[in-house]
Length: 576
Ligand SMILES: Nc1ncnc2c1ncn2[C@@H]1O[C@H](COP(=O)(O)OP(=O)(O)OP(=O)(O)O)[C@@H](O)[C@H]1O
Image: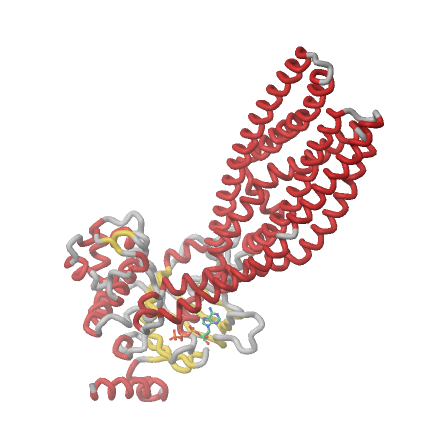
């Protein structure tokens, strides 16, 4: 797990090596200072030898500056390496998510993925920076300072072993209680982000239903939950400080008392005692640092696990080796296809679909909500894979195609299609980045979008706000259709994508399709019979199955479901 994450250090390996190296320099020089100090006292001050004071004082100044320089360099390289590592990690996550199939995406919540790319990556970045500096500094300071104290007086040094033992026990207890809370807290972050994201995306609905108070309460509760968890964790962590201070002051008191007795007995000098006390502080500070490192690492380990989970997810829909790169025509053959969103479902969502669509045919698809219409069309561009049977496009199994080649030829205007922030032109060029202005206009004329775009003061350069919030639902649908047309696909799928367009415009769009793109296979899902009745054939779906297929008149005479829908709509129309 950690190995996979560390692979993203990449070009920051050198900085990751220099940061701890400079840290070693800083610690070694820092450790030498109290030792030099003892020389000043014992060889200079005690004997009244000014030369010795100046000599060791000079060395101390050089060592102090060297230590400062090394510390600054270590800090610089650690910051550089950790920020670069986080950048690479975020990039790797983003790239990987782009390869996800709909199946993979269904597994994670959007908010969960966002938290992993932001909060979790930042945690790992902080932990990495700490590892590069503190994980070197703390143990190294500890070892060096302990060695020095043993060199000075090994009897007094034994005090530290007891202090370390005591602190170690406290640390283990703290970790045992705090770690599970940190693991849990990140899941709650997902909930908080989900609440924010849902609210902001659906702000219009929230306002329309005057649900602001309800949303505020929801946010408050998620936020309060995180606050409580952090408070709980911090309440445990806080024991670190008194434990640390207790051992520090107890050690200093004990060493001073024993040291004073030793000075009187002549087995220790004043300078040595001063160095011992300075080293005591260093040792105990290192222990404190180590305990903080453990806490931070345990927190970031939860983040590492969450990031690794995403990186470990393999896309179940990929292009095969030696994939077919050309879609010959728009023929679609469903050969006894079953499909289920989850493998452990008792009943598949689509059952035994056996149907052939000729290239250039216009197929209408009708059925109640949840009858499987979207699932049926989503299989064609391989947004999902069939669970049983085979599905071919242009005479080739869809699983044998290069994914990009297949999706370039199968344009889908999804039920909830979105526009991105940018001008109308930029949005349309998602369909074809090289399309000329004339081609853009032609596609918009076909989709009946040209007339309203021209009425905008900035025309095709009108800026579309995020999510297309400054155009109407019907206008957005027409722009999405135009964008799909620019791909010049062999198969065009409209999944209820004219639902917000008035019936007259809807009829004009269908007429344009018939006249201008006769060779494109068109699949039109709609709840409105008027949108489907001119189709070459209409599929009627119910409960994941095709219950009938035929022309409007045929279905009216023999298909009960179709007739009922028709009669409701005609009656509804007459009453209106
Ligand atoms: N991503 C998904 N994960 C799990 N089940 C899903 C998913 N999408 C749809 N389903 C289920 O599959 C079944 C068919 O849904 P589908 O969206 O294909 O119906 P539909 O006919 O297009 O409905 P509508 O007209 O309301 O869009 C439904 O029972 C639905 O709950």
